[in-house]
Image (cartoon, rainbow, N blue to C red; front, side, top):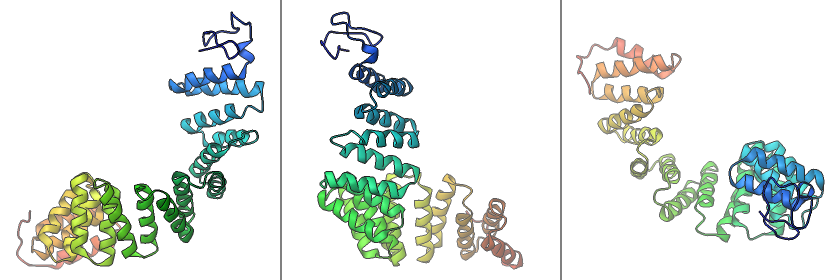
Length: 320
């Protein structure tokens, strides 16, 4: 570290500069350097303590409050981070970054009105920030303001047409609004830019599924599994597609794979039982129903299938 007055090398433990005699313990610039050194080494608690010392020396030291807020944010102390960012705003001449981090902290606290206001203030300073526009869109979405979320995310994509996160969330908004064709278009843009974007690939499959295009949905769920074979929901939805397309054998394989990952999925067990019943594998169906009831004793479909199976007298096939 260097002395902020004469630039001579000094230790982080130094109280005074040996060259110029400045009191380093009372110098905000030195304390800020010291805190940054702690911060970049991952010593968050020590950094916060030193920034506290700095702002106690100068209550108008905006940079100290800002960086203290960053450290508190990283530590998960979001309300304290918000308080620090608000203090930083009082004397900050270029407050864009402060408003942005204030928006992030208030969003994390669930204060959506606060995050919307902070991101709007940031955009007044820098309207070309795609990231800030995207974060504002997320706040609107979480606040169930879908039209505002859509317009804001479209603005983010206009700034950066290859912004995959914004394209993906825009697709989510359109899907929630029931605009499935538009949602499919957005999700396809995402996977075109990033073929391994698992969430976008899965939600593309869901949009096709909701639209009733089961073959396209099954194709996307299969591609999802290729990028993340441990995603139980993709195996389950692949099974749903096959079941609704009247292909019980393929559906069984998909449900079995889903249950290998999540053995306590009662819905998967029930649909597995239904497909086994279609193929007259009644022992396998009974086993699946029994497991479903063990997982969820109040599952109505499992209870119904259990009663129905008890009434059946068809000769049993062992199943898979």
